[in-house]
Image (tube, rainbow, N blue to C red; front, side, top):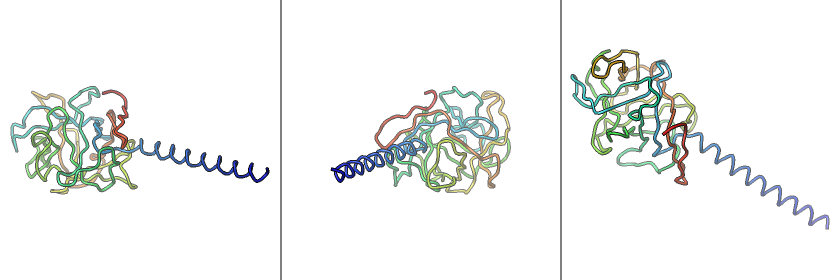
Length: 217
């Protein structure tokens, strides 16, 4: 009888540990930015969200402009996290530190992009939104620079451009008409306080295809 009780106790403890391990793993999954997630990205130094709209640059490439806005509620600040064109990431998979991704503007379907044009205000490297229906070219790729193994949702990270080695940055220059008050977003060659970004509002997709809502959408 004592042996039966001991076996039952062992089995109960084992089941508890397995369930606890599963819950812990599930909780850690929810801490990561994942492939397919729709997010707003905040520049932590200047407190503006990465933004775009169907307004073209009047100089440089003439492509769709990318700016930073203070308004947290603007729907034009949502971006989808996607994999490389020839190596798509699995929907809901956690994005790894060092992984190359595309960042696609939700409203216009154009990808975050940079190239060797000067930005209009600071004379750094212009950042634009490029392509159609989520498809552009090899200058749409950015690597996520973070510590650890995966990109954590509450972690400040940098985005380094694969093709030109610049960092996605904001240094505070403001536009006039027709996008008055919005900040210039550009590429800088050095890593510094101006190129830290953190995910804010959004919909985070998990491997089970469930949608995890964060604040508003």
